[in-house]
Image 1 (cartoon, one colour):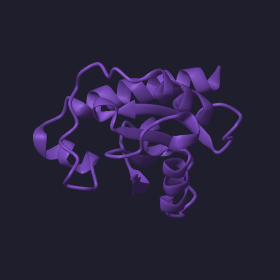
Image 2: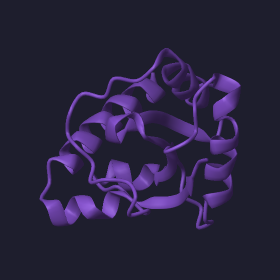
Image 3: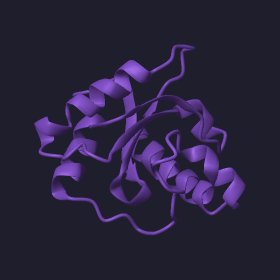
Length: 131
């Protein structure tokens, strides 16, 4: 039940984040090759949905939630913040995309602080550009 509530909260926060002004939205991406996030419903493939579901399940206990943003190009993973940089975990998530039949080309993984989401923020604590 907690994961479901956190998932709903993450969606609400992400939606309100993407509705902000253009200057605020520029923070959401790390690589300039990724366009500004757009607040539109994201149509993801069944494979992407399966991957997000697996990452937010007991298969990856450190991930509190997972969702695709930015037109299905960014996989956002909510994790507890413990002061460490989570780039390695983001790279790991990129490396598993093929396991779920997700084409990693043009995709990015962002690790978002679950604590920042609870405070209506979007703090990236790790990221990786997939290839």
